[in-house]
Length: 170
Image 1 (cartoon, rainbow, N blue to C red):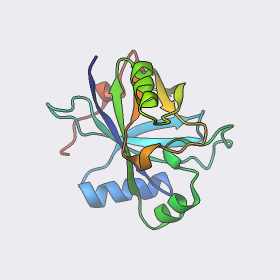
Image 2 (image 1 turned 120 degrees about the vertical axis):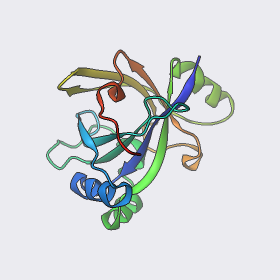
Image 3 (image 1 turned 120 degrees about the horizontal axis):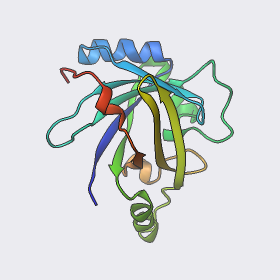
Image 4 (image 1 turned 90 degrees about the vertical axis):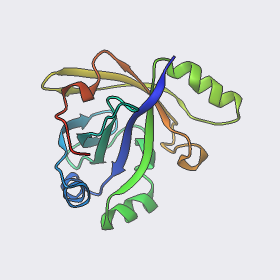
């Protein structure tokens, strides 16, 4: 079983603010992303893969003002009032997501160490290239255990989003 960096998560107050931050900070515009109906969020993506971290990408994510409120807490602590206040001023790099082929086994390993990573949740979003599907380990309260020191686990089913991303200078 291989586990590697899947993506870095940058939370923004608005997606437009996140794109502006990316352009000013990294010198490039993130490509298209999509909407996450399950979480009421939307994103833009930027390929940052390397030999050590193939298919890694940067996700700029914000609460989607056009989406209905989700029935659960949003991922990466996005509903936290302190985080929302902080990203009004500037987007924040908040987390890393690790890609694995067996999220359930790694989740149980964390549970056995006294951590509370959550449970695998099925998610999906539509793209022009087709449907993306994955399972992501999330807590019901949306928080990330261990003060964000441990990555969130993701297990892709089928195509990975980085396969259709344009190369970037990052």
